[in-house]
Length: 263
Image (cartoon, rainbow, N blue to C red; front, side):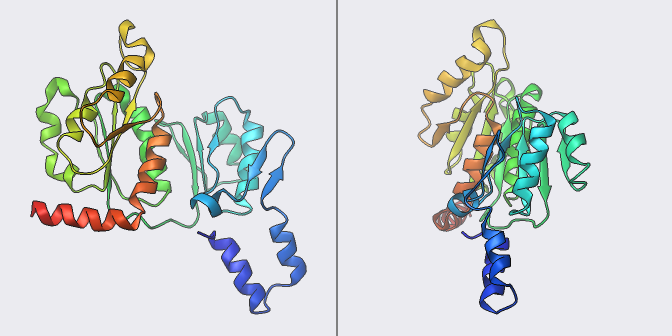
C-alpha cells in the first residue's frame, strides 16, 4: 500500500505538475531519516499500511516532538503511545491539531481519516482498572480507520454482564479482550464467538497475580481455540493486530458467512 502523499507526488510527476528536483527532495526522506537519536522509518507505511508508531515512554518531550514532525512530513496520520501530557503540550506548539487521549496516554494526529476496516472491532475489558489498556487498543484501532465497539467492566465475576452483549460481540470481525487478575474473560468470549479473539493481560491484581504474569499464563493456556495473546498491558499491539486482521479480504467473506449463519 503506497501512502497517499507518495502516490500523489508520483502522479503529479507523471503529469508534469511536479519537477524532478521537487520529487527528489520528497523522496530524500525515504527510507530512513536519521535524527541522531532516532532513525525514523518512512517506509513503514509502504510495508505495513500504517506509519511507524512512536513509543513515547522513556523519550523526552523534545525527542517525541522531533520524531512526530519528521513523520508528519511524509504521513497525514501518526500515533504516539505511552506519552505524558508534558510531551503533548510541547508537541501542540508545532502541531496544534494533535489530540491527547488521557486514559490511554496516547497522542494522535489524524489529518486524513483512514478507511478499510471491513467490520467493527470489539474491545471488552474485565474491570474498570483495565480501561486504560483497553483504551490504548481502542485509540490504535480508530486511528487505523476502524469502527470500534466497547464493553467495559464485564468480567467473569458477573458473567451475565458480558452475556448481555452477546449479539453485538458476534457481529464483530475481531474482538480484543483485556483482563487482569486470573485473566479468564478471553476464554469466555472465545467460547462464544466465531472470530479471532486477541487477549491482553494487564498488570492489575493482588500479589499472586505477579503484575500480570498470572493473567498472561492463564490466557496462554486458554482452551478456546480462537484466542491468541499479546504481552502484558500491550493494548497497542492488540489494537494494531486487530486492525490488520480486520482489513484482510478474507475477513469480510468470513464475517458475512457468520452473520448469515446467525440470521
